[in-house]
Image 1 (tube, helix red, strand yellow):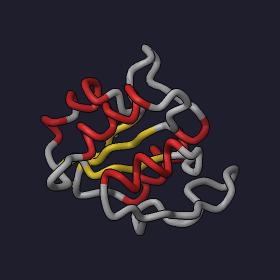
Image 2 (tube, one colour; image 1 turned 90 degrees about the horizontal axis):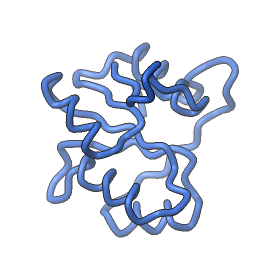
Image 3 (tube, rainbow, N blue to C red; image 1 turned 45 degrees about the horizontal axis):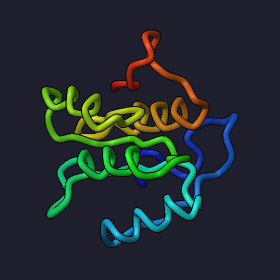
Image 4 (tube, rainbow, N blue to C red; image 1 turned 180 degrees about the horizontal axis):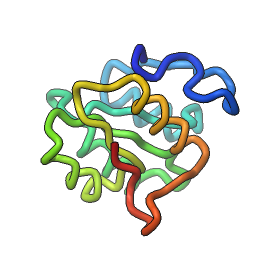
Length: 118
């Protein structure tokens, strides 16, 4: 939340964050249509954000876009497996994080339709 800030880009409105304590809360919020963009921790325990991203994409018809964060740059390929719309690598750079979130909110993909990778 700190890296992205309240307004990731001047052309976008203010962001309202909703924190979820577990998988059930994320699934319920996304299924209810309460989420415009999910930012998931790929390293979260016991269920990582990468597996949760894939589950959301499989189970929710109108799944919101998903950004996952990973600890190692070598794990970026997992975003393709998880079907995340973008991936961020720790440590998060505030400019890159905000730009990535703004791109996903605008519906920007990589030129070949692959997830945005920063």
